[in-house]
Image (cartoon, rainbow, N blue to C red; front, top):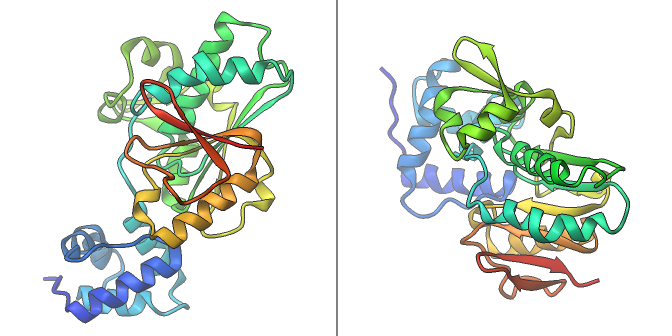
Length: 277
């Protein structure tokens, strides 16, 4: 029998730890979230109480446990072609503009989770090129990054079950871009996968080694950070974008007064941001 009781002081200490490690801010009275996310780790690591698990997590030498805890707390649900409009804007506005530059296109999915976003971007690029075969002769490369090694392994496998495929993916795209890999799983086809690579990254760290991008997707992530951390991340996004590059946030997210490096473009539907210089 495991004990999932958690004292208020322990919860506050864990909140501080999580914010320090990955910038995520847990609100008040979110103990239920910690219990549901970390409960399965108690059996996995043979730890009898949630209190003991959190105590061990604070120990910098417990690297495997720390990694598992951060994985559990940062893993979020996602779906294919989320909100639709960002992908339509790629085809109707952004890709035609980038095509005129006659160079390769680099796109960053800054919180790739289980891979649906970067693979959706790759599918969108292929659909655009189908109508314009000469577009992007230099290629389209998409980088997906995430703090969760578990999610990155999932991304690399590129295999999804029927439930995951039902979330936002049309039958037409499923037929065109996926193949049966057995045991009820479907795998993203090579033509989609070849444009996408993945690597581990904490958004609190430097982005310098990633290079420069034409488009950055960071959707439904900033809502978990404090205003100070948001400002830092947005500043680093601006530095990682080429001149006049695009930043695409979640439907409920806004830069507001966080940064002056971007101009807001109302696209009806949706809002995107373009680097000023």
